[in-house]
Image (cartoon, rainbow, N blue to C red; front, side, top):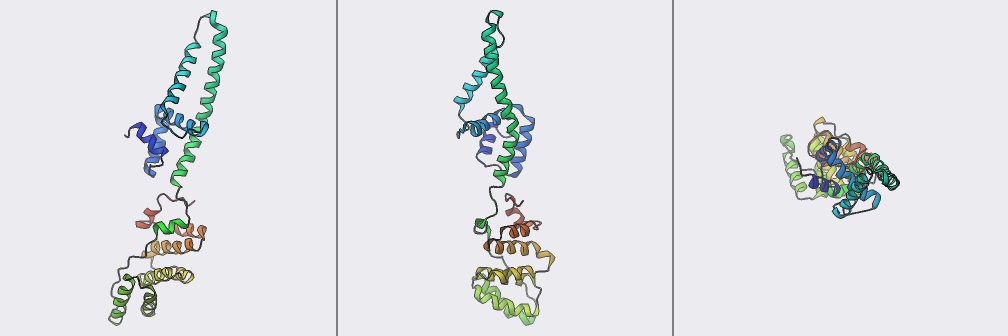
Length: 252
């Protein structure tokens, strides 16, 4: 189990991954001391506006004040009037603590959502995650061997303007070849021919390449600033390297 202070520091620094955030929530529910520490730091940030969550001087001062008020609540009758005043003060402290406690879980939920959803889908997602499809072209038939070799060479050399007509020539014989369609679509995307690129990705019918189709279609839609449509495509991705890239993305 992680050291309490380190774990909480990582939480407030937004350094926890999805699994660790779930562990954090479970520990918050089960560990009263852990919850108290988080509550204190949250109250500093939310109620006091304190940015340094590890400000032990303020924490200790508050704790000492609470203990003094609790101790003063049990006194002799001769000090009854003074005790009543301090008890009322303690009551205000308890009420404040209760209010913070009620807000804690909502605040933690919002904080976690901010952490996991910090990567809201924007145009920046394209810049950070797009790479052209890594093609592995297999030979389709003796009549297209030369074309495939030329396409493979042009695409890997990033000669996308040459890749498009070569891909079209191969697609005349193999119109449903998913890899060639992905090469063509990526070449069109690189050439900023977005509408035709989207149509090419949408034409992929091979079930084994649906994740690739949806991923690159989403990349086109992001470039077109059609964020909602891009989210819909990304939500269809089922696994593999593309799903991993979506782990911390808020698609709701």
